[in-house]
Length: 260
Length: 278
Image (cartoon, rainbow over all chains, first blue to last red; front, side):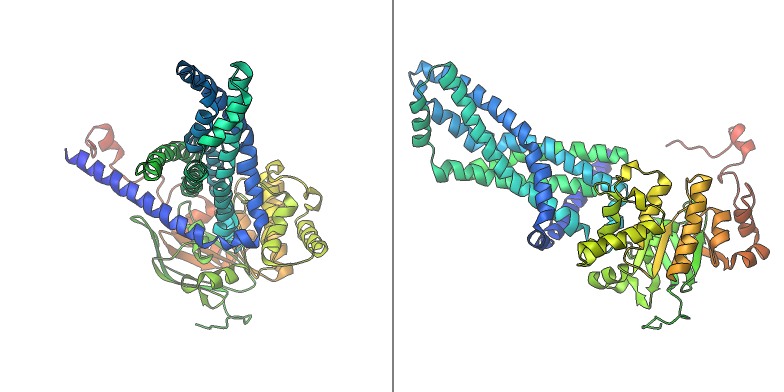
Protein backbone atom coordinates (compact mmCIF):
# COMPACT_ATOMS: atom_id res chain seq x y z
CA UNK A 1 0.00 0.00 0.00
CA UNK A 2 2.70 2.48 0.98
CA UNK A 3 4.60 1.44 -2.14
CA UNK A 4 1.61 2.30 -4.28
CA UNK A 5 1.25 5.71 -2.64
CA UNK A 6 4.96 6.36 -3.00
CA UNK A 7 4.86 5.39 -6.64
CA UNK A 8 1.82 7.62 -7.23
CA UNK A 9 3.66 10.48 -5.56
CA UNK A 10 6.77 9.86 -7.64
CA UNK A 11 4.78 9.76 -10.87
CA UNK A 12 2.99 13.00 -9.98
CA UNK A 13 6.22 14.77 -9.09
CA UNK A 14 7.85 13.55 -12.30
CA UNK A 15 4.90 14.70 -14.38
CA UNK A 16 4.92 18.12 -12.71
CA UNK A 17 8.68 18.41 -13.24
CA UNK A 18 8.24 17.71 -16.95
CA UNK A 19 5.42 20.28 -17.16
CA UNK A 20 7.60 22.85 -15.41
CA UNK A 21 10.52 22.16 -17.72
CA UNK A 22 8.25 22.35 -20.76
CA UNK A 23 6.94 25.76 -19.69
CA UNK A 24 10.40 27.15 -18.97
CA UNK A 25 11.51 25.79 -22.34
CA UNK A 26 8.56 27.48 -24.06
CA UNK A 27 9.28 30.82 -22.39
CA UNK A 28 12.92 30.62 -23.49
CA UNK A 29 11.90 29.79 -27.05
CA UNK A 30 9.37 32.65 -27.12
CA UNK A 31 12.05 35.00 -25.76
CA UNK A 32 14.28 34.03 -28.71
CA UNK A 33 11.73 34.73 -31.44
CA UNK A 34 13.45 37.90 -32.67
CA UNK A 35 15.82 35.62 -34.61
CA UNK A 36 12.88 34.66 -36.85
CA UNK A 37 12.60 38.25 -38.06
CA UNK A 38 16.32 38.89 -38.20
CA UNK A 39 17.24 35.71 -40.04
CA UNK A 40 14.08 34.53 -41.70
CA UNK A 41 16.11 32.16 -43.86
CA UNK A 42 16.60 29.83 -40.88
CA UNK A 43 12.83 29.54 -40.44
CA UNK A 44 12.23 29.17 -44.16
CA UNK A 45 14.48 26.11 -44.31
CA UNK A 46 12.42 24.58 -41.49
CA UNK A 47 9.12 25.50 -43.16
CA UNK A 48 10.37 23.47 -46.10
CA UNK A 49 11.42 20.58 -43.88
CA UNK A 50 8.31 20.34 -41.68
CA UNK A 51 5.71 21.93 -43.98
CA UNK A 52 6.51 21.30 -47.63
CA UNK A 53 7.75 17.80 -46.98
CA UNK A 54 4.48 16.96 -45.20
CA UNK A 55 2.46 18.02 -48.26
CA UNK A 56 2.31 14.60 -49.90
CA UNK A 57 0.78 12.83 -46.92
CA UNK A 58 -1.62 15.77 -46.34
CA UNK A 59 -2.76 15.91 -49.98
CA UNK A 60 -3.26 12.16 -50.30
CA UNK A 61 -5.08 11.89 -46.96
CA UNK A 62 -7.20 14.95 -47.72
CA UNK A 63 -8.24 13.48 -51.05
CA UNK A 64 -9.30 10.17 -49.53
CA UNK A 65 -11.05 11.73 -46.55
CA UNK A 66 -12.96 14.00 -48.96
CA UNK A 67 -13.91 11.05 -51.17
CA UNK A 68 -15.16 9.04 -48.20
CA UNK A 69 -17.14 12.06 -46.98
CA UNK A 70 -18.64 12.33 -50.46
CA UNK A 71 -19.79 8.71 -50.35
CA UNK A 72 -21.09 8.72 -46.78
CA UNK A 73 -22.74 12.10 -47.14
CA UNK A 74 -24.48 11.08 -50.34
CA UNK A 75 -25.75 7.78 -48.91
CA UNK A 76 -27.35 9.60 -45.97
CA UNK A 77 -28.61 12.66 -47.83
CA UNK A 78 -30.14 10.80 -50.75
CA UNK A 79 -32.65 9.18 -48.36
CA UNK A 80 -34.07 12.62 -47.64
CA UNK A 81 -33.92 13.73 -51.23
CA UNK A 82 -31.25 16.23 -50.29
CA UNK A 83 -28.29 14.94 -52.28
CA UNK A 84 -27.66 18.49 -53.57
CA UNK A 85 -26.68 19.50 -50.04
CA UNK A 86 -23.60 17.26 -50.33
CA UNK A 87 -21.24 20.19 -51.04
CA UNK A 88 -22.23 21.86 -47.79
CA UNK A 89 -21.85 18.70 -45.74
CA UNK A 90 -18.39 17.94 -47.13
CA UNK A 91 -17.14 21.50 -46.75
CA UNK A 92 -18.47 21.98 -43.22
CA UNK A 93 -17.07 18.67 -41.98
CA UNK A 94 -13.71 19.54 -43.45
CA UNK A 95 -13.20 23.16 -42.46
CA UNK A 96 -14.71 22.84 -39.00
CA UNK A 97 -13.35 19.49 -37.84
CA UNK A 98 -11.57 17.07 -40.10
CA UNK A 99 -9.23 19.58 -41.73
CA UNK A 100 -7.62 20.90 -38.54
CA UNK A 101 -7.83 17.65 -36.53
CA UNK A 102 -6.66 15.09 -39.10
CA UNK A 103 -3.96 17.47 -40.33
CA UNK A 104 -2.72 17.90 -36.76
CA UNK A 105 -2.67 14.13 -36.20
CA UNK A 106 -0.82 13.52 -39.46
CA UNK A 107 1.52 16.43 -38.76
CA UNK A 108 2.35 14.97 -35.33
CA UNK A 109 3.17 11.62 -36.94
CA UNK A 110 5.11 12.97 -39.90
CA UNK A 111 6.77 16.24 -38.89
CA UNK A 112 6.51 16.11 -35.08
CA UNK A 113 8.26 12.77 -34.77
CA UNK A 114 10.94 13.89 -37.25
CA UNK A 115 11.56 17.07 -35.25
CA UNK A 116 11.87 15.13 -31.99
CA UNK A 117 14.23 12.56 -33.50
CA UNK A 118 16.38 15.23 -35.13
CA UNK A 119 16.73 17.29 -31.95
CA UNK A 120 17.18 14.21 -29.75
CA UNK A 121 19.99 13.06 -32.00
CA UNK A 122 21.58 16.51 -31.97
CA UNK A 123 21.54 16.35 -28.19
CA UNK A 124 22.93 12.81 -28.07
CA UNK A 125 25.79 13.64 -30.42
CA UNK A 126 26.63 16.77 -28.39
CA UNK A 127 25.81 19.10 -31.29
CA UNK A 128 23.72 21.33 -29.03
CA UNK A 129 26.51 21.44 -26.44
CA UNK A 130 29.06 22.21 -29.14
CA UNK A 131 26.87 25.08 -30.34
CA UNK A 132 26.67 26.50 -26.81
CA UNK A 133 30.44 26.29 -26.54
CA UNK A 134 30.73 28.19 -29.83
CA UNK A 135 28.70 30.95 -28.15
CA UNK A 136 25.70 30.18 -30.34
CA UNK A 137 22.43 29.99 -28.42
CA UNK A 138 20.57 26.82 -29.51
CA UNK A 139 17.25 28.38 -28.48
CA UNK A 140 17.73 31.02 -31.15
CA UNK A 141 19.59 29.04 -33.75
CA UNK A 142 17.77 25.70 -33.47
CA UNK A 143 14.58 25.71 -31.40
CA UNK A 144 12.91 29.04 -32.27
CA UNK A 145 13.03 28.63 -36.08
CA UNK A 146 11.64 25.08 -35.82
CA UNK A 147 8.92 26.20 -33.46
CA UNK A 148 7.76 29.02 -35.72
CA UNK A 149 7.97 26.81 -38.81
CA UNK A 150 5.62 24.24 -37.27
CA UNK A 151 3.30 26.95 -36.02
CA UNK A 152 3.12 28.58 -39.49
CA UNK A 153 2.86 25.34 -41.44
CA UNK A 154 -0.06 23.78 -39.61
CA UNK A 155 -2.84 26.24 -40.67
CA UNK A 156 -1.52 26.20 -44.23
CA UNK A 157 -1.46 22.40 -44.33
CA UNK A 158 -4.96 22.28 -42.82
CA UNK A 159 -6.15 24.65 -45.58
CA UNK A 160 -4.58 22.43 -48.23
CA UNK A 161 -6.18 19.37 -46.60
CA UNK A 162 -9.64 20.95 -46.64
CA UNK A 163 -9.29 22.24 -50.21
CA UNK A 164 -8.15 18.85 -51.53
CA UNK A 165 -10.90 17.17 -49.46
CA UNK A 166 -13.54 19.37 -51.11
CA UNK A 167 -12.19 18.25 -54.48
CA UNK A 168 -12.26 14.60 -53.32
CA UNK A 169 -15.92 15.00 -52.34
CA UNK A 170 -16.57 16.57 -55.73
CA UNK A 171 -14.91 13.69 -57.57
CA UNK A 172 -17.09 11.12 -55.86
CA UNK A 173 -20.32 13.15 -55.47
CA UNK A 174 -20.39 14.82 -58.86
CA UNK A 175 -18.17 12.51 -60.87
CA UNK A 176 -19.38 9.13 -59.66
CA UNK A 177 -22.78 9.62 -58.01
CA UNK A 178 -24.25 12.26 -60.29
CA UNK A 179 -24.83 15.19 -57.94
CA UNK A 180 -25.17 18.43 -59.89
CA UNK A 181 -21.89 20.29 -60.12
CA UNK A 182 -23.41 23.74 -59.69
CA UNK A 183 -25.49 22.60 -56.72
CA UNK A 184 -22.41 21.11 -55.04
CA UNK A 185 -20.58 24.44 -54.99
CA UNK A 186 -23.57 26.75 -54.48
CA UNK A 187 -24.74 24.70 -51.48
CA UNK A 188 -21.22 24.87 -50.12
CA UNK A 189 -21.15 28.63 -50.55
CA UNK A 190 -24.52 29.20 -48.93
CA UNK A 191 -23.99 27.08 -45.80
CA UNK A 192 -20.34 27.87 -45.07
CA UNK A 193 -19.92 30.99 -42.99
CA UNK A 194 -16.57 32.74 -43.11
CA UNK A 195 -16.36 33.65 -39.43
CA UNK A 196 -18.18 30.77 -37.83
CA UNK A 197 -16.81 27.94 -39.94
CA UNK A 198 -13.65 28.87 -41.79
CA UNK A 199 -12.15 31.12 -39.14
CA UNK A 200 -12.95 28.73 -36.30
CA UNK A 201 -11.12 26.00 -38.23
CA UNK A 202 -8.14 28.28 -38.77
CA UNK A 203 -8.04 29.16 -35.07
CA UNK A 204 -8.15 25.46 -34.20
CA UNK A 205 -5.27 24.65 -36.51
CA UNK A 206 -3.21 27.54 -35.14
CA UNK A 207 -3.72 26.20 -31.60
CA UNK A 208 -2.90 22.65 -32.72
CA UNK A 209 0.19 23.89 -34.58
CA UNK A 210 1.41 25.64 -31.43
CA UNK A 211 0.81 22.65 -29.16
CA UNK A 212 2.09 19.89 -31.46
CA UNK A 213 5.27 21.80 -32.33
CA UNK A 214 5.87 22.71 -28.69
CA UNK A 215 5.52 19.06 -27.67
CA UNK A 216 7.74 17.83 -30.52
CA UNK A 217 10.54 20.34 -30.00
CA UNK A 218 10.43 19.96 -26.20
CA UNK A 219 10.50 16.16 -26.39
CA UNK A 220 13.61 16.36 -28.57
CA UNK A 221 15.25 18.81 -26.16
CA UNK A 222 14.26 16.73 -23.13
CA UNK A 223 15.15 13.29 -24.60
CA UNK A 224 17.53 11.07 -22.68
CA UNK A 225 20.73 11.13 -24.74
CA UNK A 226 20.60 7.42 -25.67
CA UNK A 227 19.07 5.54 -28.60
CA UNK A 228 16.35 4.23 -26.31
CA UNK A 229 15.73 7.75 -25.03
CA UNK A 230 15.25 9.10 -28.55
CA UNK A 231 12.86 6.30 -29.48
CA UNK A 232 10.85 6.92 -26.32
CA UNK A 233 10.75 10.67 -26.95
CA UNK A 234 9.59 10.16 -30.53
CA UNK A 235 6.77 7.87 -29.41
CA UNK A 236 5.83 10.34 -26.68
CA UNK A 237 5.59 13.14 -29.23
CA UNK A 238 3.09 11.22 -31.34
CA UNK A 239 1.04 9.90 -28.41
CA UNK A 240 0.99 13.08 -26.30
CA UNK A 241 0.35 15.44 -29.19
CA UNK A 242 -2.41 13.24 -30.65
CA UNK A 243 -4.17 13.13 -27.29
CA UNK A 244 -3.63 16.85 -26.78
CA UNK A 245 -5.10 17.61 -30.21
CA UNK A 246 -8.22 15.50 -29.57
CA UNK A 247 -8.76 16.95 -26.09
CA UNK A 248 -8.18 20.52 -27.27
CA UNK A 249 -10.52 19.97 -30.19
CA UNK A 250 -13.30 19.09 -27.76
CA UNK A 251 -12.58 22.15 -25.62
CA UNK A 252 -12.30 24.53 -28.58
CA UNK A 253 -15.45 23.17 -30.20
CA UNK A 254 -17.27 23.67 -26.91
CA UNK A 255 -16.00 27.25 -26.65
CA UNK A 256 -16.77 28.15 -30.25
CA UNK A 257 -20.05 26.44 -30.88
CA UNK A 258 -21.30 25.44 -27.44
CA UNK A 259 -22.86 28.75 -26.41
CA UNK A 260 -24.51 29.43 -29.75
CA UNK B 1 42.25 37.84 -8.20
CA UNK B 2 43.72 39.79 -11.07
CA UNK B 3 40.76 41.18 -13.02
CA UNK B 4 42.66 42.16 -16.15
CA UNK B 5 44.28 38.74 -16.31
CA UNK B 6 46.05 39.17 -19.64
CA UNK B 7 49.69 39.06 -18.62
CA UNK B 8 51.88 36.18 -19.75
CA UNK B 9 52.62 35.19 -16.16
CA UNK B 10 49.07 35.17 -14.82
CA UNK B 11 47.47 31.75 -14.96
CA UNK B 12 44.79 31.28 -17.61
CA UNK B 13 42.47 29.26 -15.42
CA UNK B 14 42.28 29.18 -11.64
CA UNK B 15 40.06 26.68 -9.86
CA UNK B 16 39.56 27.14 -6.13
CA UNK B 17 37.87 24.66 -3.77
CA UNK B 18 35.56 23.41 -6.48
CA UNK B 19 32.62 21.33 -5.25
CA UNK B 20 30.22 19.76 -7.71
CA UNK B 21 27.38 17.39 -6.90
CA UNK B 22 25.16 15.45 -9.24
CA UNK B 23 22.21 14.06 -7.32
CA UNK B 24 23.71 12.53 -4.20
CA UNK B 25 27.05 11.92 -5.85
CA UNK B 26 29.93 14.24 -5.07
CA UNK B 27 31.96 14.56 -8.27
CA UNK B 28 34.36 17.24 -7.00
CA UNK B 29 35.11 17.84 -3.38
CA UNK B 30 37.44 20.77 -2.84
CA UNK B 31 39.36 20.57 -6.10
CA UNK B 32 41.91 23.34 -6.68
CA UNK B 33 44.29 23.79 -9.59
CA UNK B 34 45.98 26.42 -11.70
CA UNK B 35 46.36 26.18 -15.45
CA UNK B 36 49.23 28.25 -16.86
CA UNK B 37 48.81 30.41 -19.94
CA UNK B 38 50.22 29.22 -23.27
CA UNK B 39 50.99 25.68 -22.11
CA UNK B 40 49.52 22.23 -22.60
CA UNK B 41 47.95 20.95 -19.39
CA UNK B 42 46.44 17.51 -19.15
CA UNK B 43 43.97 16.50 -16.48
CA UNK B 44 44.15 12.75 -16.00
CA UNK B 45 42.14 10.45 -13.84
CA UNK B 46 40.23 7.21 -13.90
CA UNK B 47 36.95 6.88 -15.81
CA UNK B 48 34.15 8.53 -13.91
CA UNK B 49 36.51 10.93 -12.09
CA UNK B 50 34.60 13.86 -13.63
CA UNK B 51 37.13 14.94 -16.24
CA UNK B 52 34.54 15.91 -18.85
CA UNK B 53 32.45 17.55 -16.13
CA UNK B 54 35.48 19.70 -15.30
CA UNK B 55 35.64 20.97 -18.90
CA UNK B 56 31.93 21.76 -18.83
CA UNK B 57 32.40 23.68 -15.60
CA UNK B 58 35.26 25.66 -17.13
CA UNK B 59 33.10 26.38 -20.19
CA UNK B 60 30.21 27.52 -18.00
CA UNK B 61 27.84 24.79 -19.21
CA UNK B 62 27.49 23.56 -15.64
CA UNK B 63 27.43 25.59 -12.45
CA UNK B 64 29.59 24.54 -9.53
CA UNK B 65 27.85 23.62 -6.26
CA UNK B 66 30.63 25.38 -4.39
CA UNK B 67 34.01 27.00 -4.99
CA UNK B 68 35.04 29.22 -7.86
CA UNK B 69 36.50 29.02 -11.36
CA UNK B 70 38.21 31.98 -13.02
CA UNK B 71 39.00 32.00 -16.71
CA UNK B 72 41.07 34.96 -17.84
CA UNK B 73 40.33 36.69 -14.56
CA UNK B 74 36.57 36.32 -14.94
CA UNK B 75 34.55 34.18 -12.58
CA UNK B 76 32.65 31.91 -14.95
CA UNK B 77 29.59 31.15 -12.80
CA UNK B 78 28.91 34.85 -12.16
CA UNK B 79 28.99 36.00 -15.77
CA UNK B 80 25.82 37.17 -17.47
CA UNK B 81 24.81 35.12 -20.53
CA UNK B 82 26.15 37.85 -22.82
CA UNK B 83 29.53 37.98 -21.11
CA UNK B 84 29.72 34.19 -20.89
CA UNK B 85 29.13 33.99 -24.64
CA UNK B 86 31.80 36.67 -25.19
CA UNK B 87 34.20 34.53 -23.14
CA UNK B 88 33.26 31.41 -25.11
CA UNK B 89 34.11 33.14 -28.38
CA UNK B 90 37.70 33.13 -27.12
CA UNK B 91 37.44 29.48 -26.12
CA UNK B 92 37.40 26.43 -28.39
CA UNK B 93 36.21 23.03 -27.32
CA UNK B 94 36.88 19.74 -29.01
CA UNK B 95 34.29 17.13 -28.11
CA UNK B 96 35.15 13.46 -27.96
CA UNK B 97 32.76 12.63 -30.81
CA UNK B 98 33.69 15.74 -32.77
CA UNK B 99 30.08 16.95 -32.39
CA UNK B 100 30.00 18.16 -36.00
CA UNK B 101 26.67 19.51 -37.21
CA UNK B 102 25.38 16.63 -39.29
CA UNK B 103 23.28 18.71 -41.67
CA UNK B 104 26.27 20.77 -42.82
CA UNK B 105 29.29 19.83 -44.95
CA UNK B 106 32.84 19.85 -43.58
CA UNK B 107 33.37 23.33 -45.06
CA UNK B 108 30.17 24.71 -43.56
CA UNK B 109 30.97 23.18 -40.17
CA UNK B 110 34.24 25.09 -40.02
CA UNK B 111 32.53 28.20 -41.43
CA UNK B 112 29.73 27.93 -38.84
CA UNK B 113 31.28 29.99 -36.00
CA UNK B 114 32.53 32.57 -38.53
CA UNK B 115 29.11 32.93 -40.12
CA UNK B 116 27.43 33.20 -36.72
CA UNK B 117 29.77 35.75 -35.20
CA UNK B 118 31.23 37.77 -38.06
CA UNK B 119 30.02 39.55 -41.19
CA UNK B 120 32.95 38.55 -43.35
CA UNK B 121 32.54 38.67 -47.14
CA UNK B 122 32.22 35.22 -48.69
CA UNK B 123 35.68 35.21 -50.33
CA UNK B 124 37.50 36.08 -47.09
CA UNK B 125 35.43 33.52 -45.21
CA UNK B 126 36.34 30.89 -47.79
CA UNK B 127 40.05 31.70 -47.45
CA UNK B 128 39.85 31.49 -43.66
CA UNK B 129 38.04 28.15 -43.71
CA UNK B 130 40.51 26.69 -46.21
CA UNK B 131 43.39 27.91 -44.04
CA UNK B 132 41.96 26.15 -41.00
CA UNK B 133 41.24 22.97 -42.96
CA UNK B 134 44.75 23.02 -44.44
CA UNK B 135 46.15 23.23 -40.90
CA UNK B 136 44.47 19.93 -40.03
CA UNK B 137 45.25 18.40 -43.44
CA UNK B 138 41.64 18.15 -44.62
CA UNK B 139 41.37 20.96 -47.18
CA UNK B 140 40.50 18.44 -49.89
CA UNK B 141 37.75 16.90 -47.77
CA UNK B 142 35.79 20.15 -47.54
CA UNK B 143 32.77 18.96 -49.51
CA UNK B 144 32.28 15.72 -47.58
CA UNK B 145 29.38 15.14 -45.22
CA UNK B 146 30.30 14.52 -41.57
CA UNK B 147 28.76 11.04 -41.91
CA UNK B 148 31.45 10.15 -44.47
CA UNK B 149 34.32 10.93 -42.07
CA UNK B 150 36.24 8.49 -39.89
CA UNK B 151 36.44 9.20 -36.14
CA UNK B 152 39.91 10.72 -36.46
CA UNK B 153 38.94 12.89 -39.44
CA UNK B 154 35.84 14.13 -37.61
CA UNK B 155 38.02 15.14 -34.68
CA UNK B 156 40.39 16.99 -37.01
CA UNK B 157 37.49 18.88 -38.61
CA UNK B 158 36.23 19.68 -35.12
CA UNK B 159 39.69 21.01 -34.28
CA UNK B 160 39.63 23.22 -37.38
CA UNK B 161 36.22 24.49 -36.25
CA UNK B 162 37.44 25.03 -32.68
CA UNK B 163 40.28 27.27 -33.91
CA UNK B 164 38.14 29.09 -36.50
CA UNK B 165 37.68 32.16 -34.31
CA UNK B 166 41.34 32.11 -33.20
CA UNK B 167 40.64 31.40 -29.54
CA UNK B 168 43.26 31.76 -26.82
CA UNK B 169 42.09 28.70 -24.92
CA UNK B 170 41.18 25.30 -26.26
CA UNK B 171 39.62 22.45 -24.30
CA UNK B 172 40.05 18.89 -25.52
CA UNK B 173 37.71 16.19 -24.24
CA UNK B 174 39.39 12.76 -24.47
CA UNK B 175 41.09 13.55 -27.80
CA UNK B 176 42.91 10.18 -28.01
CA UNK B 177 40.10 7.77 -27.26
CA UNK B 178 39.37 5.10 -29.86
CA UNK B 179 41.92 6.09 -32.49
CA UNK B 180 44.24 3.88 -34.55
CA UNK B 181 48.00 4.50 -34.10
CA UNK B 182 48.38 6.66 -37.23
CA UNK B 183 45.42 8.88 -36.43
CA UNK B 184 46.57 9.02 -32.82
CA UNK B 185 49.97 10.28 -34.02
CA UNK B 186 48.27 12.89 -36.20
CA UNK B 187 46.11 14.17 -33.37
CA UNK B 188 49.03 14.28 -30.91
CA UNK B 189 51.12 16.29 -33.40
CA UNK B 190 48.21 18.58 -34.22
CA UNK B 191 47.53 19.40 -30.59
CA UNK B 192 51.19 20.19 -29.92
CA UNK B 193 51.58 22.20 -33.15
CA UNK B 194 48.36 24.11 -32.66
CA UNK B 195 49.51 25.04 -29.20
CA UNK B 196 52.92 26.20 -30.37
CA UNK B 197 51.86 27.98 -33.54
CA UNK B 198 48.87 29.82 -32.12
CA UNK B 199 50.36 30.32 -28.66
CA UNK B 200 47.17 29.24 -26.98
CA UNK B 201 46.47 27.52 -23.72
CA UNK B 202 45.48 23.89 -24.19
CA UNK B 203 43.62 21.88 -21.58
CA UNK B 204 43.21 18.17 -22.24
CA UNK B 205 41.33 15.61 -20.26
CA UNK B 206 42.45 12.11 -20.97
CA UNK B 207 43.30 8.76 -19.53
CA UNK B 208 45.77 7.83 -22.25
CA UNK B 209 48.89 8.09 -20.16
CA UNK B 210 51.61 7.73 -22.81
CA UNK B 211 50.25 10.32 -25.24
CA UNK B 212 49.25 12.76 -22.55
CA UNK B 213 52.63 12.57 -20.80
CA UNK B 214 54.38 13.04 -24.15
CA UNK B 215 52.76 16.33 -25.13
CA UNK B 216 51.95 17.98 -21.81
CA UNK B 217 53.87 20.71 -20.03
CA UNK B 218 51.88 19.99 -16.90
CA UNK B 219 49.87 16.99 -15.77
CA UNK B 220 47.21 17.07 -13.06
CA UNK B 221 45.99 13.77 -11.64
CA UNK B 222 42.53 13.75 -10.13
CA UNK B 223 40.69 11.04 -8.20
CA UNK B 224 37.84 11.01 -5.71
CA UNK B 225 37.02 14.61 -6.52
CA UNK B 226 40.40 16.04 -5.61
CA UNK B 227 43.81 16.70 -7.12
CA UNK B 228 46.06 13.78 -6.21
CA UNK B 229 49.24 15.01 -7.82
CA UNK B 230 50.35 17.71 -10.25
CA UNK B 231 53.50 18.79 -12.01
CA UNK B 232 55.58 18.42 -15.18
CA UNK B 233 55.39 14.84 -16.54
CA UNK B 234 58.98 13.80 -15.79
CA UNK B 235 58.84 15.18 -12.27
CA UNK B 236 55.56 13.46 -11.68
CA UNK B 237 56.92 10.12 -12.78
CA UNK B 238 59.97 10.50 -10.56
CA UNK B 239 58.09 11.25 -7.35
CA UNK B 240 54.80 9.46 -7.94
CA UNK B 241 52.81 8.37 -4.90
CA UNK B 242 51.48 4.79 -4.75
CA UNK B 243 48.22 5.82 -6.34
CA UNK B 244 49.85 7.92 -9.08
CA UNK B 245 52.32 5.14 -9.86
CA UNK B 246 49.52 2.63 -10.19
CA UNK B 247 47.62 4.97 -12.52
CA UNK B 248 50.59 6.03 -14.64
CA UNK B 249 51.89 2.49 -15.04
CA UNK B 250 48.48 0.95 -15.44
CA UNK B 251 48.87 -1.69 -12.72
CA UNK B 252 45.65 -3.67 -12.21
CA UNK B 253 45.82 -3.77 -8.43
CA UNK B 254 47.15 -1.44 -5.77
CA UNK B 255 45.64 1.45 -3.83
CA UNK B 256 42.77 1.21 -6.33
CA UNK B 257 41.68 -2.39 -5.75
CA UNK B 258 40.84 -4.74 -8.62
CA UNK B 259 37.79 -6.02 -6.76
CA UNK B 260 34.75 -3.89 -6.19
CA UNK B 261 34.54 -3.49 -2.41
CA UNK B 262 32.14 -5.89 -0.69
CA UNK B 263 31.92 -8.98 1.50
CA UNK B 264 34.92 -11.32 1.37
CA UNK B 265 35.01 -13.99 -1.32
CA UNK B 266 35.05 -16.75 1.30
CA UNK B 267 31.99 -15.42 3.12
CA UNK B 268 30.12 -15.01 -0.14
CA UNK B 269 30.83 -18.55 -1.30
CA UNK B 270 29.85 -19.98 2.06
CA UNK B 271 26.66 -17.97 2.01
CA UNK B 272 27.62 -15.81 5.00
CA UNK B 273 28.06 -12.60 3.07
CA UNK B 274 25.72 -9.69 3.23
CA UNK B 275 22.42 -10.73 1.81
CA UNK B 276 20.19 -8.46 -0.17
CA UNK B 277 16.55 -9.32 -0.14
CA UNK B 278 15.22 -6.31 -2.01
